Picture 1: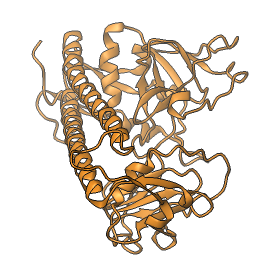
Picture 2: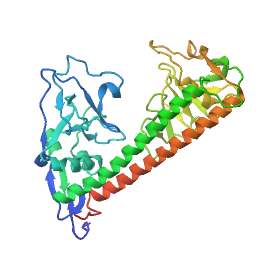
Picture 3: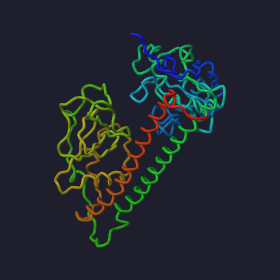
Length: 396
């Protein structure tokens, strides 16, 4: 069946784009960067995250993955360079391409591909193009996944043959300016959230230590063991059996670590949905998360902590647990052996409720800001799709 091409558009491997746009290859507008850190003079190591972009490896992982003495084969990345990571994920089905927005020079693994725009004025446009999904179809068509299912295997020649739709110079600049404005709004919102979370952290430490107390409360606080407040459940019957997650599914699969939501499953059996809310606890690291929605678990090392009776304020206990300074330096299970024996200081039930209500107010404000942030990201994604395909044209 013959495809009907809209008036004023041309059909390309990237879909329909305006006739007055040029379709160029990546190699025509970018140079591959192959300079290596042979003398190991550069010690800053970058990682390319699908979610967070180019990040300092020691900050992102809380440690250096690459060790000094092994950096001589790493590629040098200047400020403004682009880095392609072939590792695929739900957030990056062809692997992420991100621009180095750090001011310093660093190095990346030789598994990555580094390239640089030949013209500075095209750099901003390319940055937004690679944040879109327009280049994914081409990558899928050339990929040879090989032995590793989590890594996209493409040749350098195929990668740099990638077609790029290029508007005229002034339209490129205008599109980049519009999308940058949205990026700045997103960054501002993220800053507001971080500031509000820091405010909450400071207030929480003072409230939950008794340094600051609400008017009308003067009873002494009492020490109570965590094990006297919380029972534990093994997650065995709630473990997910298929890790082919999809955002189209309903039930989240959780971990107690930073990632929290690993993905979503369509499994309907073994969902934890009674006795909510609960605290999930990583028995090896002691990481915790507060959960007030149905879920499935991934790891058998996770314990589900539930209140011993209805008088226990689970949310408040969770907040207090965030202030516990506990070092998990041995590979062992901690809840039964040590953690449940830890004592926390608790006020009366009435004062607990007052503190919890106050913290909930701050949490609601933070959640509102986060919802606004997600809406900004959705709006930017839709705008990016229209501008980078020429579906919506800008006046120049």
